[in-house]
Image 1 (cartoon, rainbow, N blue to C red):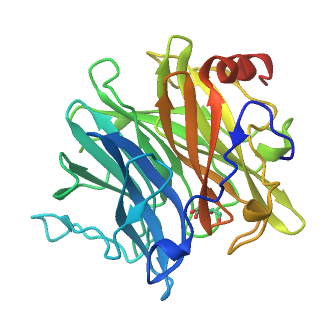
Image 2 (image 1 turned 45 degrees about the horizontal axis):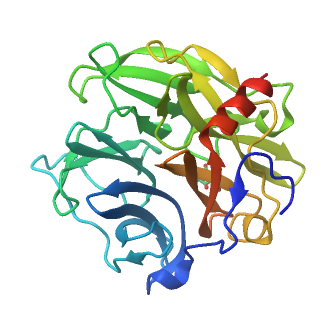
Image 3 (image 1 turned 180 degrees about the vertical axis):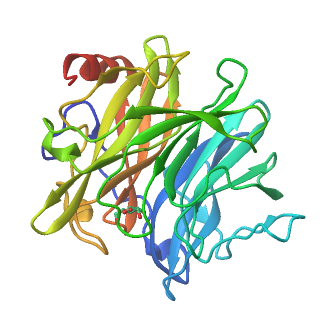
Length: 308
Ligand code: BMA
């Protein structure tokens, strides 16, 4: 396959298409996490009325999935909290015994971040939206940092945002967020990430720092192209960038990445560790989901050796 470095695409890609859910137009940009003796996913389903809904999926091997035809029910005792008809790009973080789901929960005023928690993937409780409009791409770190919950997020605008920097924020209680720090923005010397960047999967803790897979965007004369890159962030001060790739880790080169509702999009949104392997799940052309595997040591070395 074209231009692979450390990530190798699965030969059966794409692993999930719209055929998995009866009313789906497309299924992409979704969250996956190990749970009990299997894998659980929260899938972004763009339905045939082109509203975006979140659906639960289960898999024994992480490759073959059963996805529920109905969207998940997220409960709240606060009538002022709502679930948008445009709910998209979920991520799942396990922290202690609770699973936190963040997603883009579009408000009438623009996109913002939704937050819900579950312990069993049967009952989902919505919490306050962590940030105001407009914001996309929120991932919560899998442990507290210096005693606080911590998250990466990406302030945006109400449209197709021609800019975008990654910020870090902390919270004592997952409701009140502050201590905002700039992490990194686009790079003028690495073409695939000159327009905007955004966090992908939940960061993975390694002895070398937090491993962050992120997306970077280039604006061509024909519109945006989305790529996957990698960074290592300081373990205790994650707004400090130790390394960040100049070369992309995956670019849209395969037909299923190039052709779809939005062409030329690789949107990594989940990562799972198997022994020494990092497997990423990524949305392809806003249409389907694929996976790619890298050896953890090789990935970290690649990020260090191909850093900006
Ligand atoms: C971003 C998000 C993603 C999408 C990408 C490419 O702004 O909306 O859901 O994959 O654009 O269309």
